[in-house]
Length: 392
Image (tube, rainbow, N blue to C red; front, side, top):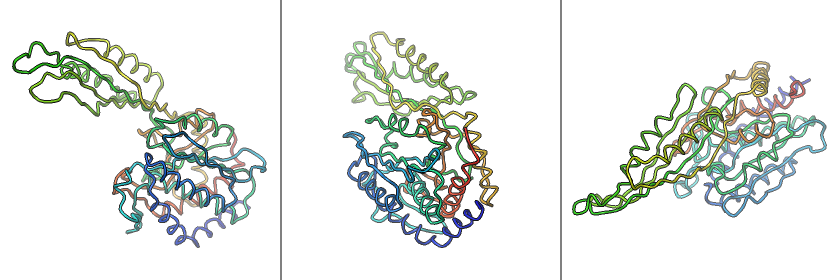
């Protein structure tokens, strides 16, 4: 029976490839840079209409004055069993003034445009999973969607991360529809991320006439940057990158102020605690007498850790691909962070990188492999159809 339904899904997708691409183009041509709240909300309304047309009961929920609204919905709330969650983000990283008019285009089996990969492709796959399952009469368990407006902004100005945790609990499993990997792997783990801004104050003076009266903030920062870089531990997957330094005003003045921004990536919470302690110690230590240092933590993403339930879910999804003649997959560890971590913290098993496959996120070269849309609509529809086979 299930094989028959999956074959019907494949036939549905095969007969609607042109429609899928038209809908993709309509979606990608909508601007939604995460800082442009009005544009993100327009996209949220568009998606709400699209999902509601398939019977999904949707709500757009205010996320505060610094972000667009969250889209949450459920299909078949009265169905038995736990829901399967499709999650991700509506916003894109490319500033609106960089968008060409109607940027979506198709060339040589690839689709191009801002957000086409990260992650409008994943949302489109979700929409057509629901369309396909409705078309073949699937009604076995609820399906839930959760798409947020400010992931590209790392939820800096909102409590969206808490909202994800609250609203992804109690699901059977989740597929986070983030950027798909070119080799068709699925992410079973992602590094966490912490940003740290460091500020040093010294004393300005004329670099020629009063050199000794000055206290160089940049010289102090140079010592600290070398200490920060030494915190990297590649064996444990921990990296510390000083990505930005700003200081001074003119060449002939001793600089009174300097700041730097650190990007810290880590696989394990124990490494996060080590790094936090070490940064505090580095900032407390003075190399140049008279300088003062302060620091501020920003945008903490805890790691998405590879746990037993994650691998059980991966094995199930891999078996689905093999069972129905779909492209094979392997587990992957990914350096970039994602909202999958908050779903995991809610106790729901989740896989990430489930969206369309492609390259060059956040650039005008961004593209997806079009066939991956069709393959993954079939793949994840089959996973829903056979979901009675897995429990946690």
